[in-house]
Length: 93
Image (cartoon, rainbow, N blue to C red):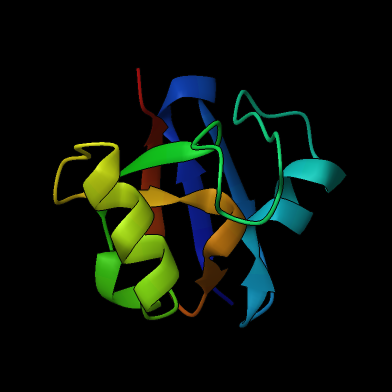
């Protein structure tokens, strides 16, 4: 069972394989915020500290949006990610 650690919240959760981060954040109290929920606002941007390979593959729409936001290479939109293994995240500033 994959573990998701959110260092910003000092929180570690066991989740099912394929679990969407947006669902996890709705089910638990986290500091990851969501606005549009479809990858167009950037409110849910997170830094992937460890385990980027364990998140769902980045789709072109997310990649294009992150480029326009001048996001760092290790940043993702939580609303677009599903978990497939252990991952460590922190909320982007």
